[in-house]
Amino acid sequence: MKTFLFVAQLSLLFSAQWLSAQDRMGVFFDPRDGKEYETVFVELPLEAGVTVEKEWFAENLNYHMDGAFCYNNYEEYCNTFGRLYTWKAALVACPTGWHIPIDMELETLTKKHGGKKSAGGTFKEGGESGLNLLMAGFGEPNGSYIDVGVNGYYWKKTDMKSMTPGLITIHNGVDYFTDDQINASHRNSIRCVRD
Image (cartoon, rainbow, N blue to C red; front, side, top):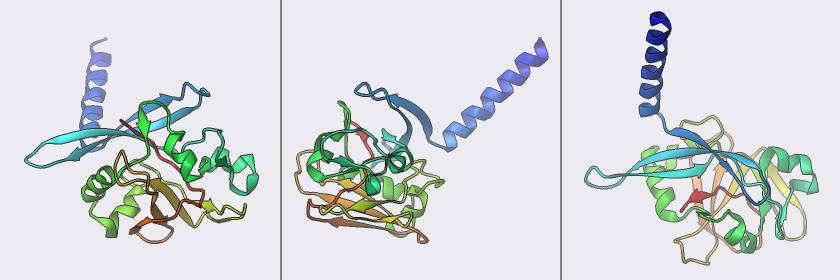
């Protein structure tokens, strides 16, 4: 019995050390449809030694609603990559208490992971950030889809009140990502962040 307790304590010690080096993982159940999403709690440094912890989806949103589409209209793509949302849908797609990322959240996360030239590599599936952004492609308003497996396009906005569509793009084969203001016509992926 003593040996078991020692092994259990040793296991907890190593787990605690691992958690202090890495961000914690969690689970969120969307009450709207019962879907389960893995989440990651990201500790972000602010100024003067202050930190803040933000919880992000570690999977693409896959909530069926008006303005949400599966790549090439195949449900199998939604099961793998989540849905692609119009800008109008993106503004209200996250569950209550969650939102699409804003610039300040992305900038702090980017700084933590080495800046725009290298953070894209950590944001991708398998990267150390735990976000696991997928190369889900995007959709055009005419119903055509491109870039699945090549690039990932994710909605963002300047701040909580902004109605101007923004986009970050994760590129296959490179560690940088791009950050743009775009028009609202495309259909892109969503990662939700807890308010």
